[in-house]
Amino acid sequence: MNDEKSCKSRVDKKAGHSISRALWLSIGMICLVLGAIGIVLPILPTTPFLLASAACFCKSSPKMYKWLLNNKWFGEYIKNYKEGRGLTLKTKITALSVLWITIGVSTVFFLGRLLPPPLVLPLQIAMVSVAVAVSIYLLRLPTFKKGTLETPAK
Image (cartoon, rainbow, N blue to C red; front, side, top):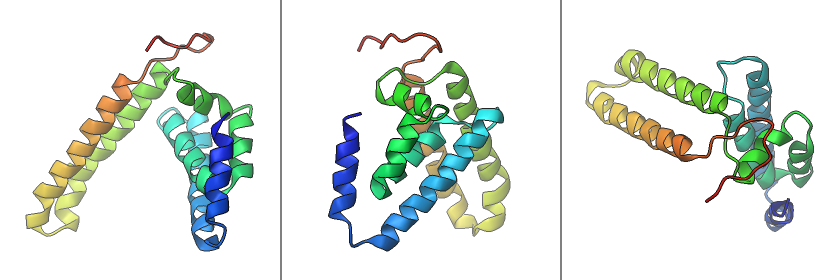
């Protein structure tokens, strides 16, 4: 992929920031584990975690980024997204379901217990706004059917 070089150059420019690189690498590994769990556990979305992992590895380790893109289990998810094929219907449904369930539970059950009353409504509005924006983004992505290699018309 073209951007392997751009990821490497980003890391080279920040060669002195080892703490930052270690943090990005750690976050990338956590996202990778969550994405791997999502492959076998239907309630956890795979693609968003793998995309986050790729972004983190791009900022921290070109070697891990290249490994992820070429991995036989994970690479397909990222390549489909990056090549404009989009996400599978299952991935979209799972991601939207998890998104709205967690936002709903958080806004209804937790915010009122964790925050002072004047902050609850503004934070609920902010969380729902972010969920709406992410939902619109996910729904606008092309729906990729496994087994087809066609790139959708733009």
